[in-house]
Image (cartoon, rainbow, N blue to C red):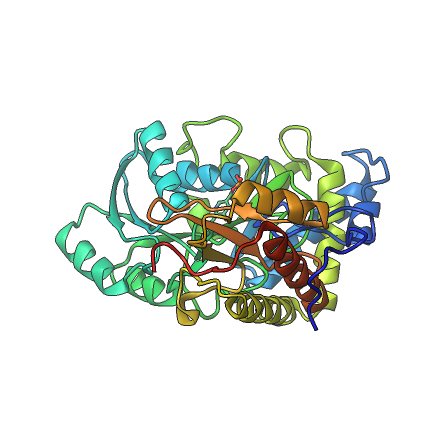
Length: 386
Ligand SMILES: *Cc1c(COP(=O)(O)O)cnc(C)c1O
């Protein structure tokens, strides 16, 4: 079933590029890329309609009805997260951040830069954050006004219990802000099931658009109270929202081709069956990937119950013949780009299961991995840390 010899030709995407087995930017469909081959006037009705459709569709994904609005933001995902924190947590507020990886730490950093009071509940990278700890922390410190949590902490690929966290935050009357960057569109986060005030994500992860914009879905009744909160001009969500509602225009040059491609990507998301369809394909990708890697002897950082079907962290093999740079380069030559590890606790690497690909591509990637291991003379893929 698996070939021991290197593939003669690299296995490439329909556009002739390597497959991106990364957490984003991701492999996008040819039709999403093709949507960018046009020029649009930002004040022309054609573009205005597309922009409004994107904003409305994103609210529909969380079943936000009239209660939520989409505030788009130029830049990468972190711009949207920074905009969310800076605009929603007032100078008089205090944010409690649930941290089990680099993206939780990044929210703490944003608070430091903005001079916002914050505290954190920290966990190891292979442990989910805890709703009962949150409950105790909120009892202990009445000064806390807001709570922030990462949906899927991409550092490890772990799924955090956002529904439980949301229930506790709500019981204490605290405002919950969610960074759902690497999960949005693939894992459910309906506002009908989970109570939160804002969720941030971006165009280039599970919605399979191209990089260039983030967005924050915010409860309107909350956003209305946020005028003047943001210490930043460009990252002011309230101002961006007011301007778009009043004039139909983003405040500063919108990333037009990115938005138009995003509109196309959202149509394809809908056609695939929305969150359930997209999440189902990724879950299959993840299952096949983990099963195949374990067959080769690799071990995952996380037990299956904690693993989000987004990106999988594998321990580096103990075998001295395993050289990550060579492994990376040889896989790249065969058409697959993987990702280095970001853990502080263990030597590892990561393989993503998101983007415009299915189990067929994952199976070919596994064949390529086996071929490269053979070529390197690696006999033992069990980890140092086991
Ligand atoms: C990707 C990601 C971000 C944003 O990263 P950018 O590099 O700024 O796009 C934020 N949070 C999480 C959990 C992510 O996975």
